[in-house]
Amino acid sequence: MVKLSKETTALLDDIEERIDPETEKNYFLQWKDFLDGKFKGDIFTPKRNKTSAAGVAYRNVNINDAIGDYELMLVSQMEGVSRALERPSGTLDIRCNYGTGIMTSVLGAKIFVMPYQQNTLPTTYPVGSVDEIRKIIDKGLPQLKNGWGKQVFEMGEFIKEVFERYPKISEYVSVYHPDTQGPLDICELLWGSDIFYSMYDEPELVHGMLRLSTDLCTEFLEKWYNLFPVSSDINSHWGSFMYKGGIVLRNDSAMNISADFYREFALQYDSELLAHFGGGVVHFCGRGDHYIEVMSKIPGLTGINMSQPHLNDMEKIYANTVDKNIKLLGFNRKTAEKDLTRNGGFGGNLHSS
Picture 1 (tube, helix red, strand yellow):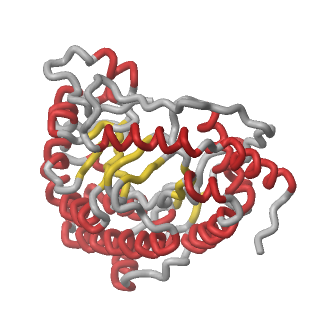
Picture 2 (cartoon, rainbow, N blue to C red):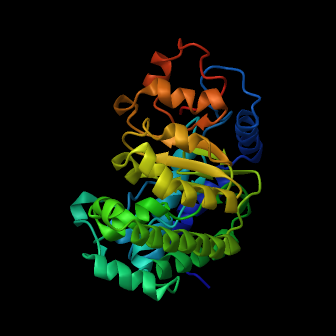
């Protein structure tokens, strides 16, 4: 049986007491109406009918401490839930928070932990050569508990056992899937920036690594969802939004390639994962207006979560998201308010906290 410190127990007891079922049910129904196309306003911003101040002091756990201790990882995540209960808007959810390098570490990449004072999630080093990539492909699917995989699944078991003691936390706090990135991101993290040369020089090798990354994501998330089953309708993510589907793909690396290369190297694999998990959302940082039209045609794409709108031609983004009933989720509020007067508005398809 998991034993917790008095401080951690006090945090969980406080959250359990503060969760108001009627408030959370109402908050969920606001999201459901939005995702079902029933919202008729300009910018969707759900609000809790009732907020509550934390009854215990925050410990603000450093991420380097959290990745080395399951209880501290739980504390760091549940303090986010406590803060959400203090605010009118914010989803109650947590994850096993081991950074962008989970999948690459499972594939054998060396883990890089950031300096303590940075308080920033770890990642992995690139493997360093095309020969190493070939070796990884030749080995096929790795053991899922390689690298960070062991901690992810053990942390999941830890959370599951603790949550069973708290009925309201178990009911209203979601445990969303770990950061499995997306096939193209996994490949760039593993390969390094030379992958972009290899797209010209050795495209078949790139496809081989993309195939392995896609298969690994599928197997990893299938195992995860055996532990925490995904909803067949609506799921939450990042403490900030809900979405239809079962996966949130990261596609930050796509900013570095053309629309034609997105179509050639990424579209097939993104489409496969979205289809397998009943649809979902794609996240990207940086610029995405050059490939958004290609991406918008993926069956099952229900939403886009993007940052840095100032780097994008937002009319292209809007035309291929909100105008096609694809939700913009967690969008920058200042930009949304500035663009409210665009022809056609947002069609009830834009969310901002």
